[in-house]
Length: 83
Image (tube, rainbow, N blue to C red):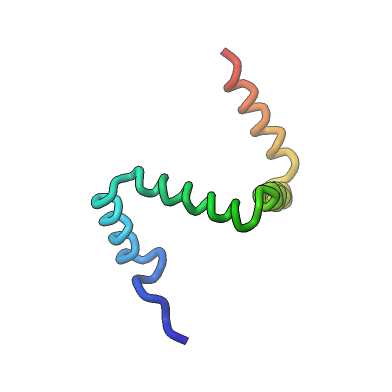
């Protein structure tokens, strides 16, 4: 099996490549390719996929942070919405 081309992810060389891409194409480029990738996943896996991974993420957060975490962030969000 052949090794992947390019720098090791997270290395200085990879960071430099990302900065060069940003300078060449602009910040909007990342938004555009992100939307394109999200659309491709939606077409391939369906919208239920996002609900499934959201649920898994919420369960993982609950295990790691505890139920009190949701109470704390709910209070913060609630006070932020009031003017």
